[in-house]
Amino acid sequence: MTTKTLVYIESNNNVIERVSKEIISHVRHFFADSTVYGVIVGDEYSIEAVLPELKNLGLENVFVIQNPLLSTYNVCTYSNVIAQLISNISPDVFLMGATSSGRELAPRIASKLDIGLTADCTDLQLDIDGKLLATRPTYGGKMMATIISKTKPNFATVRQGAFKLRQIPMLHTEISYFDANVADVASTLYKYEILKTEDKEQPEDWTNADVIVAGGLGLKSKENFELIYRLAELLNAKPAASRAAVELGWAPQSIQVGQTGNSVTPKLYIAFGISGALQHMIGLTNAQKIIAVNIDKNAPIMNTADIAIPADAVEVINYMLSKLSD
Ligand SMILES: Cc1cc2nc3c(=O)[nH]c(=O)nc-3n(C[C@H](O)[C@H](O)[C@H](O)COP(=O)(O)OP(=O)(O)OC[C@H]3O[C@@H](n4cnc5c(N)ncnc54)[C@H](O)[C@@H]3O)c2cc1C
Image (tube, rainbow, N blue to C red; front, side, top):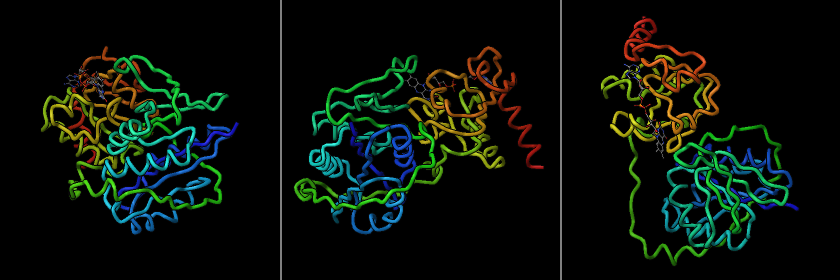
């Protein structure tokens, strides 16, 4: 039986989000007997900008929902037109990235279609009947649950960085324009403008950096957390944080690693003053090597780290900074 899988292709500022490509690459690689379609939403200019790339994603067909009223992302209009497409083409499986917009679009689409949603998945497989097996952390990250939905399409969102980008065979991709009813919803909407946030708030595609330098509560203060940024810069690495550090306002949520943050795929993850709670470590399952610096040699992360350094985090960072900036 051939399964029809539809993937939402998220594009921001004329750039296709990496998570959309990760999902396509995973599906192409692991979903035997699946035809894979994409759907993208925007206006003429934003679609035109990514059209060449859309044809090279390894999809059988890309459904384009194009309208001047869709020039700016809006959760109401976007969820509405995507739901219309799904009702029309009736895929067996529908997937999207668990990005900020994915996390607000998905429940609305599920509600419009009266279907289930498995959010924030870390693995997806198809069973022999073509049913989606969607795996995600549960009980605060203490267990992994594999969920099989009874509604069609089987719908899941996928965490960024959960899947690797793999080589996939290129296909001839058909581009089909889907004529959604946009005006109905758009006429009821207020207008708003998307303001550009500071770069520090939205690091570009940092989750696949080769080296990540992360800080947690063991750094003791926001001033000390700034050392993470300095060290990351000197190592040509990206900064990251535990949720506890984010909650104290030491770092933006966009660089949080873990269950409710990002999954990362570095060759090397250096953790300063992070205990290694399960909810943090879930974001590190694809990290190749971990170095942990923690004053407590019995902290959980010290057991899983490839190199565990029982020492004061700030002292080690300052030592590294002094050696590296020589
Ligand atoms: C549903 C749910 C989702 C969650 N999602 C996430 C998530 O996405 N990401 C996440 O990170 N957490 C998440 N958490 C929170 C998680 O459980 C932990 O509370 C959090 O990861 C702890 O952050 P931390 O390691 O910085 O702080 P702590 O656990 O307080 O650890 C601080 C560490 O610093 C060490 N230390 C102290 N002084 C020093 C020093 N001078 N030098 C070096 N080390 C020192 C301590 O020994 C300790 O090990 C979640 C929790 C729940 C319930």
